[in-house]
Length: 109
Image (cartoon, rainbow, N blue to C red):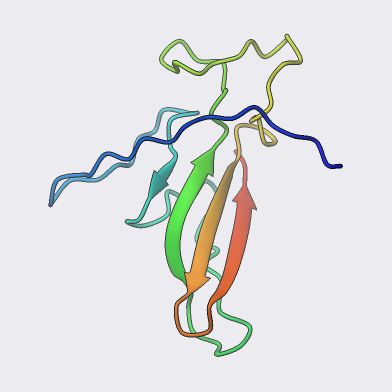
């Protein structure tokens, strides 16, 4: 069986019209919708079936980044970080609503 990560509950908070959920705070950049907050430049995938650009669904940050502002921080020297992906990396999730095909892109600083 693959490694099982500790669980976190995700609470959704709608962002008011004209505002954005984007933040530069490492470990706190997870979000749904809007546009990707790329670390290294746009890597929006195209659907392998219809060749159309895929729709951005959301991004998952390294939520245990050891930062004073992060309520979920885990000491970087403790070896107890489950959600540190590379150098505070993020996973970007995309979906083709026409072909029902998902895709993910990983980037880190």
